[in-house]
Length: 233
Image (tube, rainbow, N blue to C red):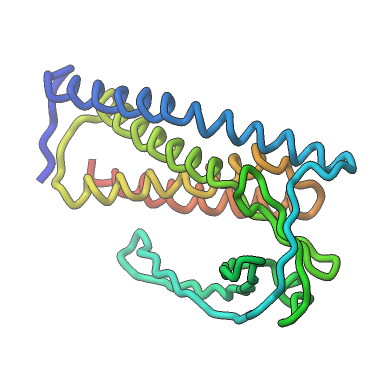
């Protein structure tokens, strides 16, 4: 059932203030991770200039495997579709005996055979890369992941703010949570790309084109689904 809130009712102003509060709090919390990610980028730039700016640690490859994950999506017409992703995982052992597994690129997976040596790249004690047989896998620092989470929350707050300012009518809990999910989903890929650029710089050439196409799809399709939910309005 659709219920309109005329004018600027108190309920709509509460929604506006809630959205504004979420945006401000999330952006304030993002300040620290942003500065840490910028500091990480300076070390990456130092490496790109030919310096050995990351700490290094020798390790040995002790395991490798592939596995798949399946993600189910709900389309705007209520139908579902699934995507299957293949992951390439490598396990290494450090000098103290501890082991760690990470997903890597297919190229590094092919080169990293069991029993071969590898080298970890460390930043403030965190593993941010692994080199094996001339191939390198890069990992985003924890700070950039934290930054991304806060930015996604800020985007959700922006959606709440805009809803209070521009709409404000009510048509049930299901549509509320569905629109909030779709709106938030729109931000995930752009935010991940933005934090990746902040940490490692922007790709060029074909990689940049692929990034733009992927970003357009992951924003355009949810936006189309979100706009479609307003038809009844």
